[in-house]
View 1: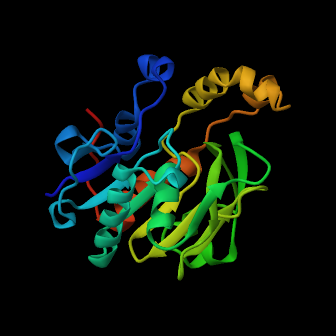
View 2 (view 1 turned 90 degrees about the horizontal axis):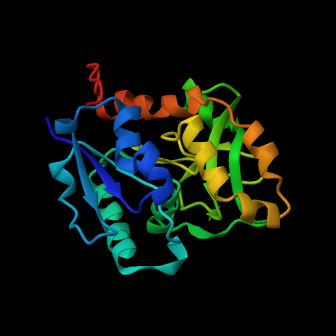
View 3 (view 1 turned 60 degrees about the vertical axis):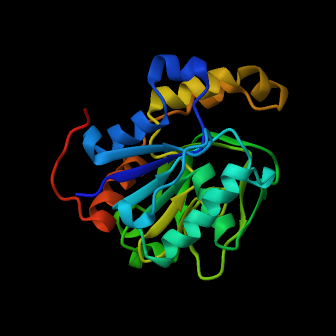
Length: 245
């Protein structure tokens, strides 16, 4: 069976990864896949991407970089996304990966008006979610962990938004039969979300956002986390339970 590709576009801050692990591990746990079923490619570090036909699907991670920087490795990955769309490879982009997918396919990414969105936030599904293979599994309102300064401001042609927050209308987006992305982080646990908030304590306070209130609002996000397994089952047909190594 072809592996699921994790396209690593960045790293968690060292103070967080030292205690909680890093992006590939979080996705592996969320997907419940053993290591032979997962292949990690560090595009930020210069690793080449495989031909889309060599993998069963791809997850694009978050990053501290900004899509608007148009970094060479990021633009190369955008080209790969377009090639993968041509062969209908199942893809799930998260945070930076979400923005990069939209950018690659003709959308517009820039800074979210009003500044960063961070913490556990309530999301509301749009009407099209009821007829979507993944969106149909979501309640009308659910919680998700998020931390971002940039966002998808304009969707690519043909893309459909399935869920929104109070400030960002494009938190869950469908691009094609097997391609979706989330601005929120389905791979984050509540403890990881708290760690990100604590790390930004002084910045949040300087921006007028009380970090104590944000920490108190962190809750478990089972519906958001469930999208990882939902993507695996719906778009990769991985019906066999495989616990993470």
